[in-house]
Length: 237
Ligand code: 3PG
Picture 1 (tube, rainbow, N blue to C red):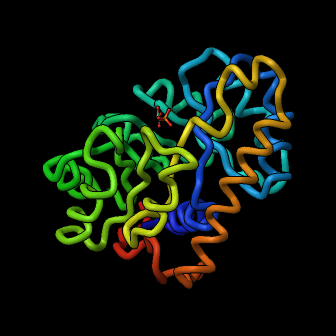
Picture 2: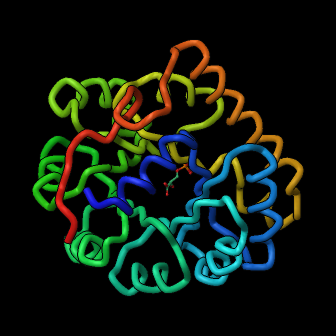
């Protein structure tokens, strides 16, 4: 793992929850970013599911302290566009070799989606260190992650898909969960209506769930400790 990958994944692990957002327009990016920062959730995955993605990333990266990544990356073209806009990490729904190879060659941290052991092993063969588990709830959720942890104890996952305030703590309690992604925090409809207060309320609630998990489980936040610690290594370049 390169230093950049390590730094970005450690930041995601410190956040523990990543708002996955489809922005209706780039104009709402600043309000969204400020709401997340005020709530104590300083990261975001801007999905390439709307034409606003690139412009929104450009706006969001101007906010100090906010870690901005790009999601739903399904082509090298999108990966390049996200990188150019300033995204610091990429997330994909599935495992595309061309996208993964591009990101690794560029030193851009990427977490592609997997949901079976064969896909996990293919991803590890490609040199990946952190994997998105998607769609988490539909593919066995916490039970599947527990089974993965028995055979792949060195692989941290970002489960996404069907995660919300009700089941978040069950995922965060697992040692092989780096962080959870979810769209419930900043739904597109809330953004269209300019309801940044509601987004901040949801993000604050999620940050509270993270904090109570840390308090009750004694989860350490330093590198190499519990909760999705990044154990495997790959040399730079
Ligand atoms: C993703 O792109 O990661 C998912 O669509 C998010 O899943 P959710 O909408 O169920 O949170």
